[in-house]
Length: 447
Image (cartoon, rainbow, N blue to C red; front, side, top):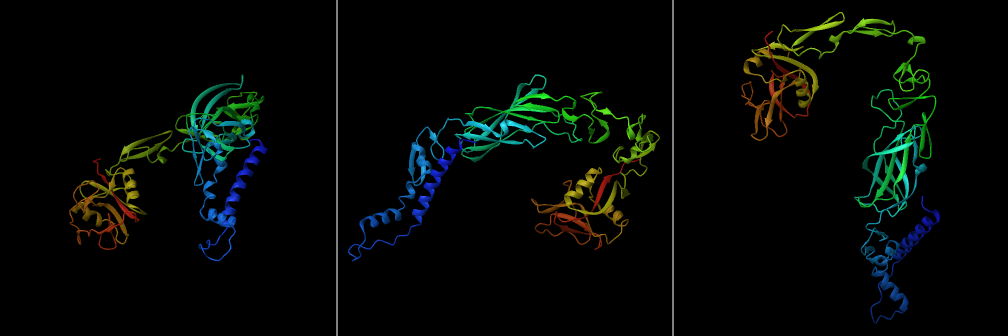
């Protein structure tokens, strides 16, 4: 991005300095002979060996020799104020300079995602406050006037001392996917600036993101293409169908901002159905909607009855939620054989209007007399209170160990309780992350 000759010269200089330092440090000199030893050692070799062995060379080589703005100490620059950076080449308040931007700042969403752009820069220094700042600008395609709007910080990534990338904030200049109901925009502008310290920013450069299906941009001047539609802010070509409804299309002779219904082929006929009915596209007839297929359309203690064009809810005669049965005095129960963790099992119970079963002595007897054995483990609503090291019901009431073979043993990690139907419905401690069937309990309501 910068002048190629300048970049090449600075890179060559730094490479040359680094290579010299590495080669010197690779030299191995034997220890100098002790004074009085009859070995002839030239004075210049003795001096060079002493310098290399002492590390004096490596300690005096720094990046760009600190640019003349600092002292090279032990191979690192100590910059003199107001200079900063690894090679002391920047002033602490000196903003970056943006000299170039990828593709002139023009980005077509038909060619790439337009989430970030490369910039040619100078005077950049990577650090915690190194960032980009983006100002969004609405573009009026009839006049090309840009109206600035929200300002936000975005991610900056340094590629080299002369190049970086700036991320664009999430934006609505997108291709229509046929699903989203959020409005789009056929063209959107930004200005980008860069800062090393979060206070002093570079010169701003323009960015334009657009959809070439319905917009033409010359530089940053953008105009609407003729014979296209812009529907809910998205570009649609003349004759192009809605991705989710082939009977809807862009017909510029009818409208350029609304979908037009096709009148040929399977789209030639349509239904005009009353409330409670829906159109069968195969027969083009109105058919009753079975609202009772929506299992949550009535209350937990109600049944749904479908009627022609409508439905109604009525109270269950059992006094229990759907799939529950009354055992004992005041509760309804349901046994789930599908295995899940304790937490997942409890969530299923609460979604059905209840919770994991907290069985009294009478309800325990009634329940176990009415379900089969050999169903494996079933979670119930008893957990270990690690503070008191005692088992309690999940509503925090005291658990009375009246079941045969109890109290439960307090063991490390066995924080949840299951009923073992293979062992006379005995209660056993288990890890809460184990999987088992479970018993749900809901209040009985008098019909």
